[in-house]
Amino acid sequence: MSVILVERGVLSPLGDIETKKRNLNPFPDDFETVALLDNTKPGADVILEILKDSLGNRKFLDVKKPAGAPATSEQLKKAAHSDLAILALGDCGSCTSWVVLDAIRLEDMGTPTISICSDDFIPFARELASSHGSNDLRMLEVQHPIAGLSHDEIEDKSLKIIPALRYLLQIP
Image 1 (cartoon, rainbow, N blue to C red):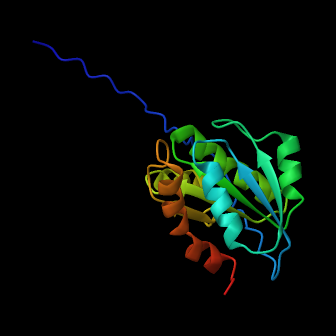
Image 2 (tube, rainbow, N blue to C red):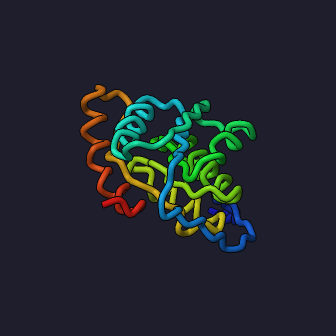
């Protein structure tokens, strides 16, 4: 009996890239305009609406983009015309990828960001951000799952992340 051993390389889906550390943009001491980047995943609109209500009397720019795809240049430019951007929702592989990558693109444009991802996908989101030099990309974890839940169930999960949002933004 003979055995043939074959050595095979395995590719990481994150790739092996040379990257420099990206510095995040600081949040302004006070902010008037917040971009809400909604990737149209079920429940993303509810989460963003709850967070919007917790931020008080500010101006909001609503930007919608398709789930599982990058934001267009026009969508990013619109979001970049704000003091900060909140992106939602990363609750599957491709959506999490684009929430993180769009946040990095906005940070590169000078706009500080907060990404909302479900807790099941946060480890992947952090690894992806790190592979692009954004180890400290700001993310909030909402309890998985979101898809298939009622408005009230999503609202309950969203209310739980408001203290972390207010802490990040230094709102008493």
